Length: 202
Image (cartoon, rainbow, N blue to C red):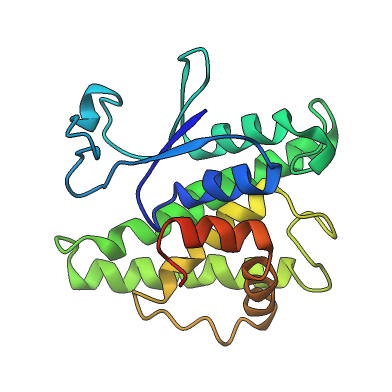
């Protein structure tokens, strides 16, 4: 498998999943600013949408969209329990979390990164995002991870996107459950390995 990624972008989520799953894979940097691969290839010729992550399977099949990619990865290593079994109520709860993180948190950060976003809208977007994170903070009360005591691919995704709070100067310190959760996830060897590979940790 090949994971096309950009350091610190949402592609860190499947990168974490691959490490946690213990699968054999290679990474190919596809920087979001240049869209040029290390060998000079235009990334748009591989993924016309131009963004990451993109997972290329051994048979050449291309998988797009982080929530789909991480579930595929989890299903390749069922013993690691990175996702509940397909068809179970717990699997749909996992998908619910993946969708929530993708549409409410991930996309909530997007306008804050754009220099073209008007200041007034950034204020509104920040308030909405912090409201969603406050709700997540409440959901984490008394739990190790989003699904309880078991780390899943949803945790890798939430950890990845909440990493973006720091460069945007969003203060999460008041969200004590979320802050403690982020420290727990950050301490996992698979998470540390993925971050080191992307140059995010020394």
